Length: 587
Image 1 (cartoon, rainbow, N blue to C red):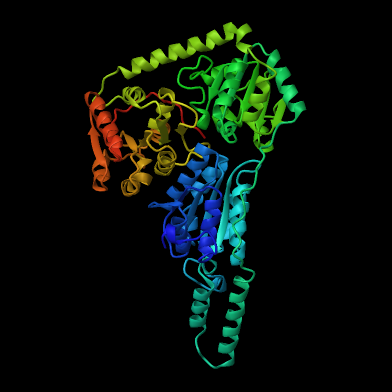
Image 2: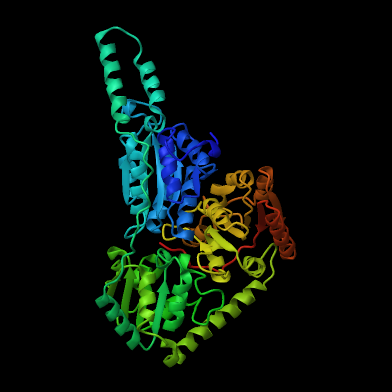
């Protein structure tokens, strides 16, 4: 079935109805790992102009859909087969749920007449998936398929965004004639009463599945209005912030969820004039060298501030469960989620609504905070400068292999101005968060609060597809790479030219550091300095080995050259062990 041969309507089968609904909602890529239960969706999606990107693990498909949402604000879409296809996706679903990332997972399912009877890959998927999504629906008739997709894509973006799930049994995805033929064959031709009753039941069952079908166009996309803090909440926040002597703003990922134009948010922060710490997806919002952006010593700054505005950043472990903000300080929490706004610490002002919207509205009422608080801004800036000098000194230290800080400084100096950084790892990636400067908004992707390893390949797929021609860098720890190495086959097959840098220090170093110190044993936390570059080369990528500081520049140059030629590259860098992040483990 070729795209040119397929009129918009009528539909070829139920899978075509799903594909038409996706196309009508502007879905450009469908991430998947093939399976017989979803084959009609994949074939129809291709015919209707939706790019089908097949990967080697279902989690990768869902991670990619998650990243599309983070990068664009549109829900990403993945499709997986029944049973183990769905269960393999659960970690990635939970990662998206905690990151408040809107995505749609389409799950195949056993034929409706065989569910609960021991069919291949048949489990009751609804209760399994329910804890990991904000909404789920099982299509029961072919006519329900397109409306279910439309509803799911709207619900994913409403209120607190998150993942949604639509189950599509395989007998709804083929045409009625084919399904009736399957059921007739299954019923046999026996003449006994039981045989006749079975044929009657299956005939009526098929009639119900396909009742009411019409060649109507799929439902149009629904408008979704972002929630907004009330005028009273806005006024209270403006009063408290304007009266502060040492104001501080922390912007989290959620502030960018509804930001169609992040430059408006950046402009609002500039007008407000308070010092700003950016985290998660918000990293890069102010560019690389904005005078208000602070990079280091956040804990100390929070403890000294007399008014803290958390914009889309909850008081979870990253803020020591709210203990980083002193009790005498005014706490303003702007968040779409009432629960997260009050998590572990009741704020003085809870502004329930889109955090980015609140910042823009606040800037219309309070501006120029830094103009009369120069001493406060200067003190924070001086600390940043001192910390940068410390990092420079660490980068200059020589060792047996490659200094990880020197490597990260080289990457920061080498990467293009349009580069997107994907972070997948522990110790090496944690160090990168201190050293690398994201080039702009939505150009830093990390797992988020769930901390799931294995996001690298999926996130990079989405970044490269959404930003063709721009550089996509993946920073892998050698432990985390284990989940994504096979996806170099995916990068090669789909001509996705990513640049992967593996910080290979032969261990699960973030865990090892505390385990060995506290328990005196390295059991389970050591790895080999494996030839990951050779494995990537075996898939058809450019494999590069770097074992000394003198080889860094050439290795990165070769990787960028491969990228420009349309070929993925993996740079396997043998790192020296470092104490740069001693004591940084979080629980």
